[in-house]
Length: 333
Image (cartoon, one colour):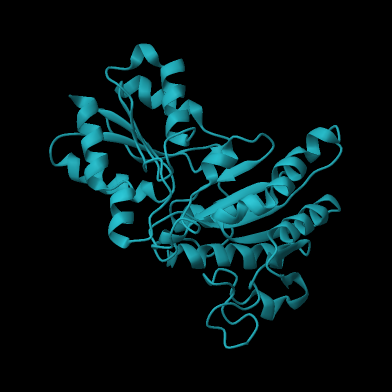
């Protein structure tokens, strides 16, 4: 099976979906060109290169827009209502605030407000998270905020294989899907089939299996947690590592089943702790599996602070191997 980067896996999913379904189109800033394209439309495909080659194949279905997130998402929402399947790109997840009304008050509520008579099959892609020293306005995860709103499906891939399968599922879904791509993982590789395949929403992936501690990690924290768990195995500590893949819907059954078996829980995410996914999963365990817990639930996440620009400060800000290791050992103590 060929090795592909997450960037290439998502690009391949877009190409395959557009080849199969004429209603799929791409819209966003620089999706037809982008940084380093030398003015040749389609040669790069966005500042992260994810939409490369699409304009050259389907120039009428790859729409470059002005710098207006409200216009991008508004156009996608309207197109979805009349039967199209747009894939809109918001360059950085931080800019979701600009188009919050279109996403939360419109797309997320169409099916409910129209009594189930309408659907909104739109995907909105975001380059998400820290690790690039892109400072406070270009480094937020934001998926924890959007998970709180009903009517939206929220996807957070942690590897190239999942990214392709989840993207194809998202494009086929009849509800709005927010697709958060950890930009620090764009260059990470995994085995990815050439053919089309889908991964169901709401089904977590057990990345590692063990008896001592349940570790739930999101996005770019999944490979970090996996490396820690592999190292702890040499010390005789074995852990379940659960990658939910989607935060809405969330596979609560898989998490609770694991916690009931291990009796211990560590939740890892790059977003700040207040009202975040670590707190949500910790509350789930406290509410539904309290009698099974043998120790306190530990949350490993960034501090309640904007993301710093300095590479040294950002490295200290984000969860790392030492913090995850300490949390796992503390639950065992």
